[in-house]
Length: 346
Image (cartoon, rainbow, N blue to C red):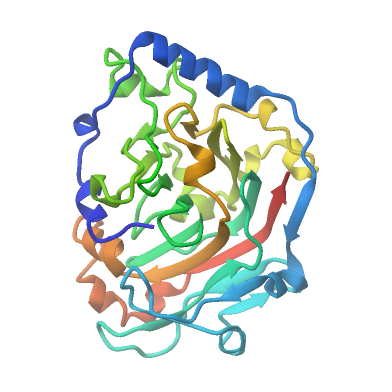
C-alpha cells in the first residue's frame, strides 16, 4: 500500500530509475531466477477460501483507514446487514463492496470493507481467482499481504491501483534491517528491452529500492503491461487469476486473463514451472526474502481517495475533486470485489 510520500514516486518517468549489475552478476541472477521458477514441485492445497465458509476465516477491520481514506470500515455484522459483504448462492462467489446508495457529504466517509485472513503465512503459492475488482474515480482497491510490526516483516502488493489506472502494479515493501532491492539488467539494456528474454519478468520497472523508508516508500515495483490486469479492463475480460510464488530464492507474480488461465490452475494442481514468464520477479540474490518477509496475513480492502488516490486524482482524467466524488454514490456502483476463491498451496 502506498503512503503519502509515494505520490511523488508515481510521477517519476521510467527513465529516471537507475541501477545496474555487472554482466557476470546479472548472469548469475538469470540462472538463479530460472532455477527458482522452473524447478518441478508438487503443490498441495493448504487453505482454500470459498463460498459460505469464506467469512469464518477472515477478520473484519474496523479502525481508521491507515492510508487516510474517506471510508468507514464495517464490522462483519454491519457489513453483512448492509449488503456490503455476502456470498452469492448462485455461484459461490464472495462479494466485498463499497456503499453505492447512501447519501454522503463531499469529503465525508463512505462505508466499505477491509478483511484480513486469520492465518498467517511465510512462503507458499497463493492464487486469487476473481471475476470483478472495484473500479471508479477515487477508488483504491488492493489485495496484499503484510506481517507483524509493519514494515519490519514486509508487505507484498499483489493487486493495487487507483482511479482509472489501466494496469496492475506489483510491489514489495521491506523493512530496513536486511538488504532488499530489485535486480535490474545491465546498464546497456534500455527500458525498452526489459521485456526481452534477457530478463525474467515481462513487466516494466517502476522502482528498485524495496525499503519502506526510502524511495518515498514506493517500494520495488513492477507494472503490468496488460490492460486486462486491472480495473475496467480486468472486469471486461471477466476477471482472471493473480498468482504469487513466494520462495526464499525469490518471489514471482503472474496475471492470467480469464481466457488464458493455465489448465493446471483450474484443475487445482498448479505447476508454475509450466507457466509463462512472470510479470514480476524479485530475486533472493539482491533481497533477503527469508528475513524481510514473514508471518503475513492476506488482506482485501477498498479505500476511497486516501494518500495515493487523492494525490493522483488530478492526473487521472476523473472530473472534479476526489473529495467531491465521495458524495457521488453512483460512481461506486462497480466498486466491488467478486472473489471466486483464494487458494494457498505449499
